[in-house]
Structures are given as C-alpha cells and as structure tokens.
Length: 86
Image (tube, rainbow, N blue to C red; front, side):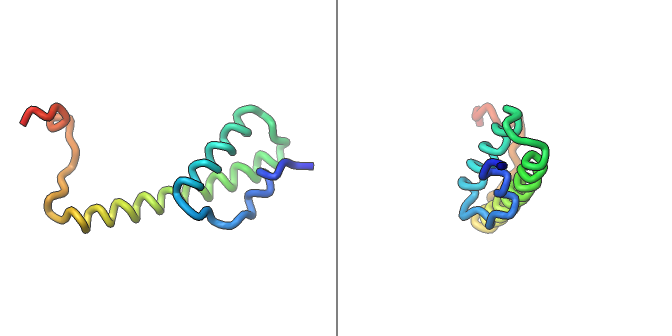
C-alpha cells in the first residue's frame, strides 16, 4: 500500500506558503531517499509541481504588494549597492 504522501497528489491546496514549503521538503526527501514505489513517485512529483506553482504564485503576490507599498522608492538590488558604503 502506498504511503500517505503518494495520495497527496489529490490533496487540497496548502493553507499557507510555509505549509506548502514544508510539504514540498518532505516530498523531496522521500523521493531522494528512494522510499516511494514508481506510482507513488509520479504522484509525489505531480503534487510537488502543484506546490511549486502555489509557492511561485504566493511570491508573485507578495512581490506585487511590496511594489505597491514601496512605490517609487523600490530600486533594483545591484552588487554595487551591496557594500553599504554610501
């Protein structure tokens, strides 16, 4: 019988970015350890792909919010400014 993580491919969307990252880390660890049979590995890969998309969307949303909050003050990071010797 497959592990519960294999059935996670049909699970509901995560409640938060942090929860998605934690689940993704667990899936990756199981896949890297070779603990899952082939079908479960495919299901875990599918779930992992969904989690990555969820996390990317969350990061894009936060990035948009930061841009709105910072307005014109937002400047791209460059190696020249990294030293802090202004």
